Image 1 (tube, rainbow, N blue to C red):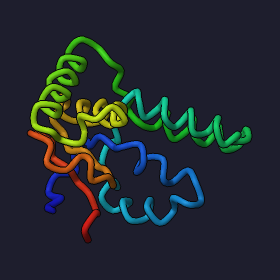
Image 2: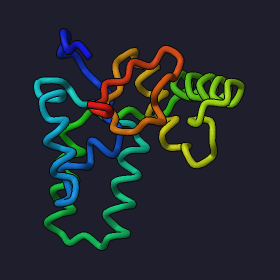
Image 3: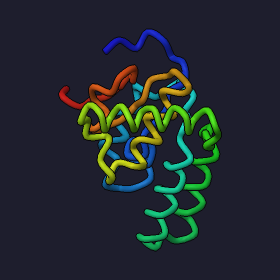
Length: 144
């Protein structure tokens, strides 16, 4: 993987949220060099997943403030007609080709991938489900 450009990247929920939990510190450290100096973009669904996880784990006010701070530092992409068109095209491609991203349980992942496709920027993720998606540039540390 070549990191020539330090332009924006879409960051998947797992990588973005890794720095927010003690169990995620190693993952966060692994991706830090890849993310440093790059504008972080996240999908609206990443915000929802992080908020849900925090509520389910019953985070206290300090951790919730930190979550709000980290989310506030990223650019959030909200759905609109162009993003939903890319999402629908991606989902149809995944189902037609039998790609795992077409499965029902990957709804949030499809929105994240569609966000990167729509913006035409790489996706940073530590999840094999994003591998081999048509026109998606995946930046990952998997396999290293």
